[in-house]
Image (tube, rainbow, N blue to C red; front, side, top):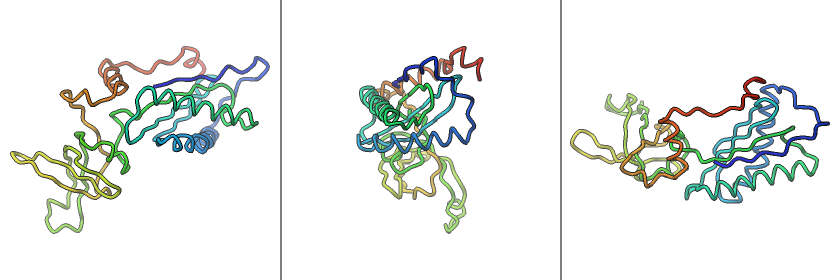
Length: 223
């Protein structure tokens, strides 16, 4: 994860007052409209964008991903590109984020739910747990009910996902329409940790240690 902070506002500029959820939502959409084309041009997708007010400043959390994955150098480059776009907007008189802000750019991490075709495509080869929704048009009752499965993603496209499933003593291959799949969850395989990015490994370690996100004391007092 890369972090960048905009320089504090001059003393003559009053602190930004507490903003309403509607105002934060409007800021989020304006930030999205500005930075999504920047990320797309660089060949990456904007997976998520969070905007919240913490104490006297705003916190922007940008989550990006790409077909080839995202390494730490890429995160740093994209962080600079996003910050430059925000600075350019401000210099032109369009202050999209009022006052001070902190920018955090990161990859989705292994705990990101798989919901879109590109998520499944980028998880080919990984072990995934997912709920298969029942098919009401099926002729067999067993196929009409939901079931939870864990399988390896063999292939994925815009409409379907193929999973390799270990059932009892046999291994089967099943292809499911995307609209029958709930959010998938990548399963950590400790014998394949070399395939996981350094940033994801750091996230796993933090999770195991029970490390909570750090918040400045000033922020806690002012919330």
